[in-house]
Length: 447
Ligand SMILES: [Mg+2]
Image (cartoon, protein in one colour):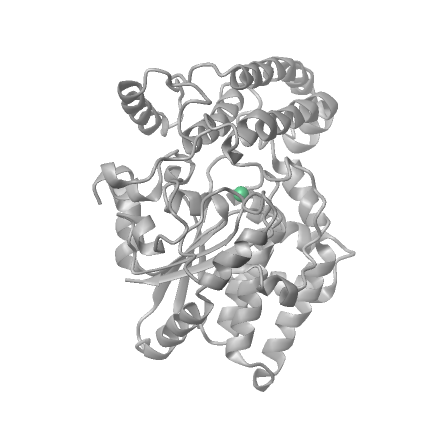
């Protein structure tokens, strides 16, 4: 599709937009919480998180003052709509960032936070936060959102234990489950696990993951679950005895959502939709702290270790965790990091910006499963599509073999809503229905 026919991108220049609310309210609250964390917990951070020897702790504590000053400066620049400048950094993503910014300077004579597209300003904010820590002496490997991510999972132990008991009961008696309804049950948990997003709640940890799936079903506005099921069923039936095949999951949040994603994979292994001896799962994570709760490699390590080491956790949850560990040990599950996931580019640009990643997803993978809101925004380009636009059209040049998006809606973009009853229902929804994560979509597309 020629670019001139594309809709306009979302931007904070529109004062009634969620982009505006994000830049003027959510992001300042998020950075203030990081400043607060460094103020209140500098001793614990240097001794426990960074595990520095005692002779370096004082100097590192002193360095937090510098970090706080720089974070406060970044907050000020955001709030006073200062220019978005090229990134000077030792990290390898700087070139891709600066090439994109150079394009932006050519097109736009006011490249400021509120005047560029939302995807660019929000990604730039998180990238610049990372830059502050990267330039430090002691905090280069510090994840400033790690505490929030850990604490949010600890609130969800009870539902996690409940789900573990359910999953283990499946494997004890293979006759006892119906494959399709079990597929649906775990897909729903993985979908609604996406409600627990700390960037939307500005880091507030108040949700427990105990969902009423029946009640939530009516809130799925596009539901391609049946086609997703047929596809996986067909895949598992047609697979040649000698072949192994690959699927990819592009994660969103750590904590309870990550746990439900692992449960989804393990349940699909157990019920034979993704047979353990045939399947390799590539699990894609972020390579830097991103949108507060996004999953990094260390969050996966922490989750597995926390469940293993915490005495109060039920034996069922520990047993399930052992299976997760085994999947990693046998390389059925492989964690992958790629810079592309923390660039501001949308996924239609992947073939140009990260060609090897795109080729792998298109040629090697039987399914690319995207979790969450930011992935969704990048899939459809964060553009103001008419809600009736087809998912395929909104994906533009990004066309892997089979793609599924599981997303609770937390930004004012959505496509593929054509059903007249749903369109009527939406008219009765609260004004902010696209911002609150109460509604969801399941898109599936086979090319
Ligand atoms: Mg996220």
